Amino acid sequence: MKNLSAPADVLELVKQLRTQQEALREQLRLEQTTLQTLARRLWLQQEHERAKLSRELHDGVGQLLTGLKTQLGQAAKTNNELESLYHTASAAVESIRSLSRLMHPTVLTDLGIAAAISWLNRQMLQPAGVACETELDIPSNIDMDLQIFLFRIIQEAMVNTVKHARAQRFSIYLMYASDSLRLDMLDNGKGFVVGKETEGLGLQSMRDRCEAFGAHFTISSSPGNGCQISISLPYQYKEMPMASDLL
Image (cartoon, rainbow, N blue to C red; front, side, top):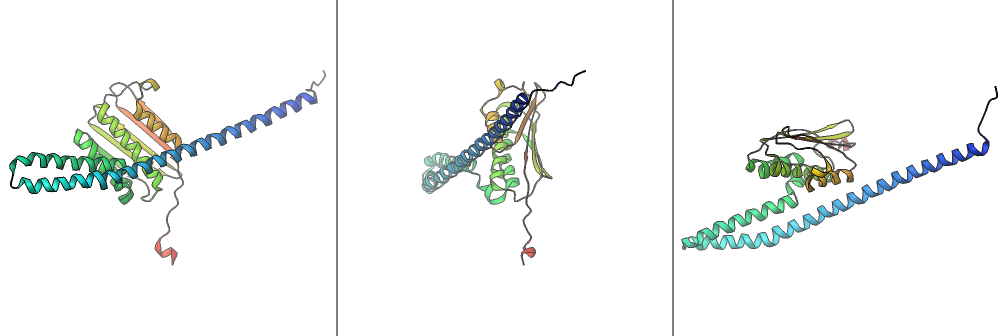
């Protein structure tokens, strides 16, 4: 029986096709990396603009309202009719402060992600009667860009829980292990059928942020069974040297 083999020109053509396929795969990988980098830069630029607007609110409108509140407080001591205006001005000052902090979380940059999560709980979940439990096991000084990313994801999940879930409990688990970070958020609300057509801007925003950071985003929910959002991303933490090590 004859040993049949492909002609040399066919083998060469197959080899060329394989080479072209590998080149295309590499090009697609590079383009995807470039798009991720651009998306991340755009997101960080948005955070920069939020910080700028937050300062303008605090130092501009906030200071004007604080001055008005002080004047009304002094005038209300001799004119009871102005007392209601004083309380309105006080409420407006607090509203501006809360909006400024939500736009740019100074508590995050000053005290870190754990303190920022506690602040979000006080601002969003507690007033809605939602109990929050947290379990955090991460380095305290991970990259600030990453802390802002986690803060925004958790903030968006809390907004969705308060607005849509009708939940009584919200849980956050944030862990660092080996070379990756894992964030799980669960509520015991009404749940929903998972699908692109059921996702609002909040979930889509979370997906977009995850894509920009190269994170894996999954969501699990069904009617009557609450919702779980899980996010994992590769992260190599470099431990900061002790002061004694630098001497």
